[in-house]
Length: 393
Image (tube, rainbow, N blue to C red; front, side, top):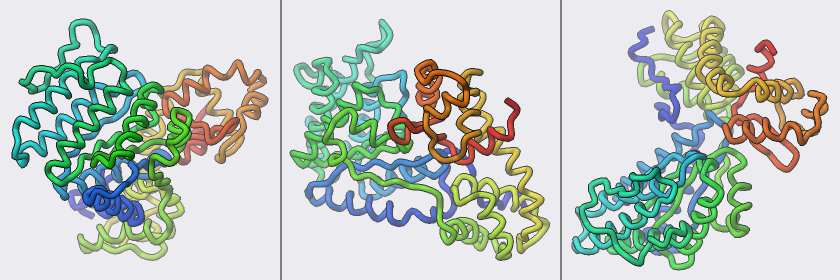
């Protein structure tokens, strides 16, 4: 069939043509937006899940929903080697720029931009000579507000001032943070404290984060009240009905159908994971000679889809690991696909658990494994164990 008309989109953070199986999360966020707009108390939101389940897609959809309501929005992607001070400043700058044309008091916007500039310039982690950050902010930096150098104090004051600008317009501001588990430990504490202050004074600014399954434990380790601070949404693989819809609806718009046997084969291959659904659907479309797409078409397409996943989805992550880290991952994979005990991995490798801590910690920082709970670890990528078992040790 015509590959130009292929509707499937197996890309990083790329929205699929049919966002199936996420109605509950979308409804939850709709409630959050509505309550904040009405001045009702509401928690910020955190979405967690494995790689490839659509966290970034959902985050971007939330951002679009906020923009449709004329909110100010900004988005960052956290990195373990970088403070969030400058990225947050840039994101809030973008959010307030969206609101500024509708604000009746330009001096209020200028006051906030002065505070924002002062906040950004106190980035102690910036390289020498690069501290004067001013992307299009022509106003002088304010003094005595969000410029103490203590991120917890500064971020709280910045959020309160940003929320006040949004209050003037009767809307809100939403800050979206992808890969939130990579926010530095001190910064997580500051972020939680700022959100806590906002939740107490009812300011219309929310933080919406997305991260790996262990993100809630990262937040709770920072502030004990974080479990009450955020509304948590855990997303996983799609059920059979949603996975079928993700394939059928886009195809129907192009006048193409699937046989029931083809849908059975695709669900078995993709196991309901959204990224895999798109990957197998795309190759099956490209290789099928005509509509309807059959189980035989899927059988022929599967090896090519698996090869693409092995190179792009699995292989790129595997290549980032050192030899010692690969040995550790192979040991996990040989035990099974469920969370495994670190002691069991050490026993299999004939090592003391303490001697394997550097490899384990490095893999966690690289986002390849996560600690499901104390003493247990698991892969962040679905079917990664299956991929490793097919690789030479």
